[in-house]
Image 1 (tube, helix red, strand yellow):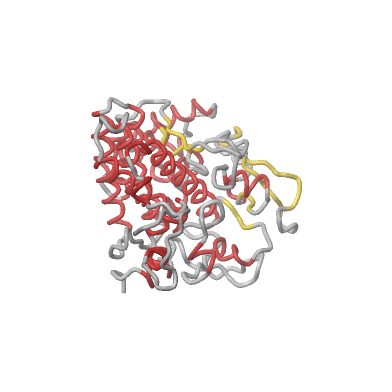
Image 2 (cartoon, rainbow, N blue to C red; image 1 turned 90 degrees about the vertical axis):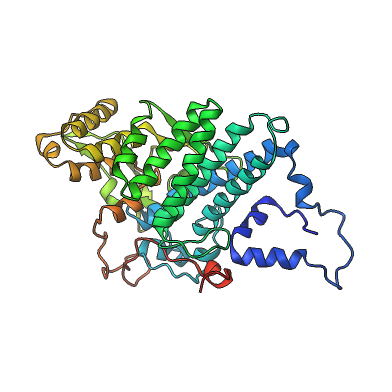
Length: 420
């Protein structure tokens, strides 16, 4: 018998430790041989009549993981700086994450977890996708559209694992490189595109096209990435929705930066202008006070205005920048100038137009600010670490490390039988 466990706990079965815990819980014990009446078998709830609830749960898991990923990886990269006197978070900013430490190993969604929330979200999407495929259209209204959405969310789960971690594992499988995770993501997005076309759902198709373009670009499939991006219409965006109802459902960027002052916006994103004009794509202001650690000045983002503010998962802006990166030359200039016009800033200067590779890096840094891209862009473009490795870490002592991608946590390495 397998009892039902609360979703946020059960889905951590994607990780080795939780799987072992669930296995122990499920086994018949001679000490506990009376079945508790409050436990419900998982299979009883995983029925077609509950499909909408199951899909909604997987969506919620992804949205929580996505906001947490943006916040946490923004610290690891250079969008945020640590602004609290809490040694548990210093390793994120210092780039010295230890795969054995508690926050890094077991941090959950709604906190500063990374691996667990994304793994849970990826598992939830894949598990829901499996269930939907086993049911019929007669059983589940809009089943094909739900299949498209879950396949796309699985694709993004694989993308985040590949972009944030040096390696990862899926469903107790072998250790996977980022390249393998991106290939898996590409396959999930292809499945999502096919289902969205069958369901005649353009929004989900464009969501998956942007995701596949991202996965392909990460694999060096530049022409294929640009072809996908070109199919995405101007003004398209697909949003993750948030609400202040709970820590799991709120916009974590606003909570940790604006409300709690746990993180301050990095100096490289403050007071940005283009050709003398304030760049509204990076709305950052001095809060006029210290952060949670008062000696650190608090600068806050205003891209997201409240705990209820939505965050883009996929946009036409990302699609246009992928096209520009691949095409280069005057095509890139035209595409970027259109984005500048939309933002109300001057067109590219002659110097920037003449150096498109460097310009693309800066445009992505600004246009995709706090949208989950920054860390992997620093990896993909080979940008130097800031501050440099060995520089003094001001908040808690020690020196900055050399991590860009994050190591596989011990929770996976120790408990996954397919990883040495």
